[in-house]
Length: 582
Image (cartoon, rainbow, N blue to C red; front, side, top):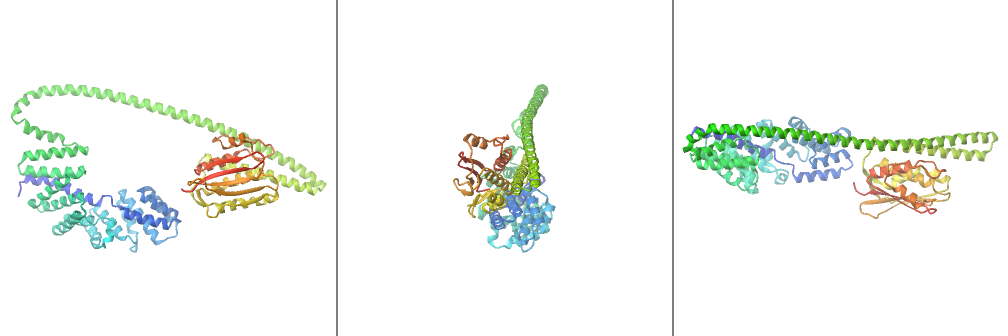
């Protein structure tokens, strides 16, 4: 048996080795690609469950907070599908475990039913939580069945983890024979897999096992083997522990030169981990070997050295104080400059918004006043024709009133959506959309107006055409473009909606009319990327240009593009390019 000094020093080392093995086993990254692949298949199968799909995607991306949010939304809002509920509880338990909220994680894992396909993985997670809480007997009850699984199950986690954790549990329970059996099996499996880090961890735990039984002659060879293997890996923490153990072994063998070499190597790895708490102690050991015969000379020079040290420290403290003051001054100067830049930028943005607001109110108020005045005048004529019982004139005036009211309503509707868009209050969700049905729904409301003007309408969009966009904003875009097409079409004209593919990333939705068209200068002004609003050029048309401005903003928010093809007197093509993929 080695002297008591060995026991005292190695006891600290033993604790480090033993718990390092534990952490390597239970805290390593254990969400495998195999399980992520299973999750990916499942969320694709149930893609219609949007919350479950998002929870699964965030789980694969290791975004634990978003996983918790969407899995809870799925559980709260969806009619329960037991299989999906099991997955959702597993997602939540795993995410909470990663955030070290072990009690809450255990509650979620307990809600997973025994019929869950991956219930054996749930048991492994519960065992790891029990280990974190030092509930070793409980951990064993979860781990024992995991040693007897079919081999194909071990692609979801390493079998060595199960045996190593069992060995650690039995060490804590002082059942050393069982601990030795499981740790030996863990070592054997690690060697088969050629997992060097696991082998070192297993050797460390076996050494700890023997040390706890005072079998130092059995423990030391494992410390040596762990040290030799640590030379071939890049894990500095493992190297540090293995080297420290060897230093202690050589100190107790009285081979101080080797012990010093190990100590130096230990400090090197310690420096690599930015842990320099014991560098001075190592330097003292080195000095004791180097200047043992010159101790008297050191004592004579000590007073002089102290004086120099005080002088040096005084200069150093003065320099540090000056640097700190300069740093603080520079920091506050930068912060002030940054704040000034932010204020200037905010002022410019505010001025631009105010200018846009003033222009908007000017244009809208003018057009609303014009519409109300036109309605007032038309109503007077309506009363005159009513007294004269002129039915043909009455019909014409009623149709004129309807057009004025529709124009004013469209103006107010566009104004509402534009205001919501500018203040970020509109709900917006990108999702796959079938274009044919959206065009049919939107065009249905304009059928009476097109019949009244004898306009032939065709929806040539393929039923298979699908894009990714926000449905409500797409309807607003279509309503405005169809309204403009009708407004600028002549009686007996045609309006056609169809798609074409000119780019693998976009689908072009085209609204084509045979109307009055526009000049090239007007076309260029309309597609210009600006936040300003233009007054109408045609005094007989009702509108502010706000509708097209709203269309451009919503197309941009949908990550799409707008183009216009037109020639005066030959009609117009409004081309909306929308993404084919999310």
